[in-house]
Length: 337
Ligand code: NAP
Ligand code: FER
Image (cartoon, rainbow, N blue to C red; front, side):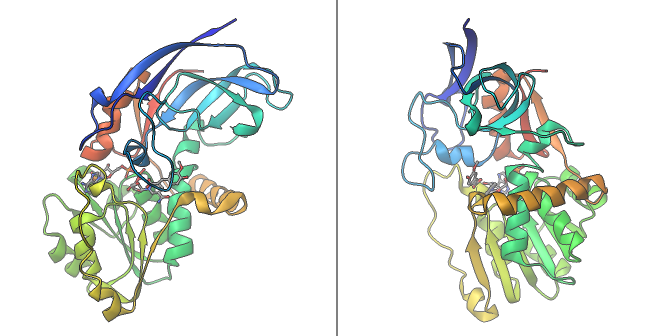
C-alpha cells in the first residue's frame, strides 16, 4: 500500500521577504515503512524564524537548503503504520520531518511524546525548541539575580514571552519590546512584565531611560538592529547580553556593518554572548522541560499559540513571523487525529 503525500519545497532563494513564489507544493507517493520504521501523519508543523536562514545560500551554522529540497522543520504527528517494535500505531511523536503531511522515519530518529497534561502542540513551543532557547539562554548565559533589570525584545513571541516570565520568577524587573499595543498589554496584563515598549510607535530610548533608570543588567536580544543599538548604550555595570536572534536582519539584502557602539561594553565591563539552543544536550534539556512544565501546571508560566489551519497556508503564514502578524508560537494545524 502506498500513501499519497504532499510537501513544501523551496523553489527559489528569497530576496528580502520570503513570499509564496519561493515555495512549491510537491505531490508524491510514499511506500510502506520498512523494518524499524514508522509512517507519521503530521498534526502540527512549527514555523520558526531560523528557517529563513536555511533558505539563504552561503555558510551558516547548519547547511542551507538546495533548490527543490523539502523545507526544514519539526512536526508532531501520530503513527499511522508501524514496522517498529518500539513505537506502536497511535503513538504521538515529534520529528524533524520538514513541511510535509506524511513522513517515514526510523524509530531511532523521532521522540515519542509521553502522556502529558499539556497539549502535544506545546512540544513545538513552550515545551520544545523555543522553550529551551529561553530557559538556557536566560539561566545559563544571563544568570539573573533578584532585583536586576532585564530587557527582552520580541517579548510576546515564543522565546521572548518565556524569557520574561522566567526572569519574573527569578525576581527581576522585566521590560519587553513589542510591535503593537495588543502585544504590549498582553505581556503586562497576562504575563506580569513590569513594562512594555511599542518600538513602532514610542521613543525607545526615552522609554528605556524611564523604565531602566539604573541601566539594563540583562538584555535578551531576539531582534538586533536599532532596538539593540539603543539597549547597548544603556547597559548597567557588568551586564550580560544574550544574542539569541537578529530577526530584524533576516531579510536584509545587504549585511549591515557594525555594531559600532561596543564602547559601552568597555565602560560597563559587560559580556555579550551568542547562543544556539542545540548546544545544551539531553540531560539539561530534560531538567528544563520538567521545570517549565511544572511552572505551567502551577500557573506561573503562560503560553500563547497562534495556530493557522491548513497545510496549504504554510508559506503565507511563514511571512507573518517577519511582519509581526503572528502573536505567540506560530503553528500550522495540518490534520486532526
Ligand atoms: P516569535 O517572537 O514568536 O516571532 C517573531 C517576532 O519577531 C514577530 O512576531 C515580531 O514581533 C518580531 N519581529 C519581526 N520582525 C521584526 C523586526 N524587523 N524588528 C523587531 N522585531 C521583529 O519568534 P521566536 O520563535 O520566538 O524567535 C524569536 C527570536 O529567537 C528569533 O530571532 C529567532 O531566530 C531566535 N531564536 C534563536 C534560537 C537560537 O538557538 N539562537 C532558537 C530559537 C529562536 P513584534 O510584533 O513584537 O515585532
Ligand atoms: C538549532 C539551532 C538553532 C535549531 C534551531 C535554532 C531547530 C534556531 C536558531 C535561530 O532561530 O536563530 O539546532 O534547531
